[in-house]
Length: 121
Image 1 (cartoon, rainbow, N blue to C red):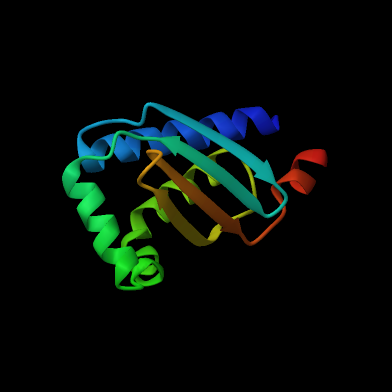
Image 2: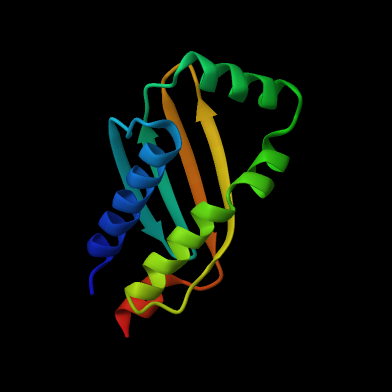
């Protein structure tokens, strides 16, 4: 199994999840694995409602709470993807950081184990 295969699987599952949530998939998604972390950059066309929601959350210092409470399904999908690839890792934390002006959603996925070391074996 190769790192690129896992990165592609992560982009596919997150694209599908985004489409289920909003009815629209992302314009583009890139994922990179570095040790215990998966970095994802989604190019999105945020709806007015999404922009308003994210602005409200960010202005009220609620992004951490939002990340904790609303990402359970995303964690489950990522963990299932990693398990399906035969990796002994699970998601400890997912951090969302929207850039509303540029139309990007940055996602940091922190794992319990180093995926790159598992691939070397």
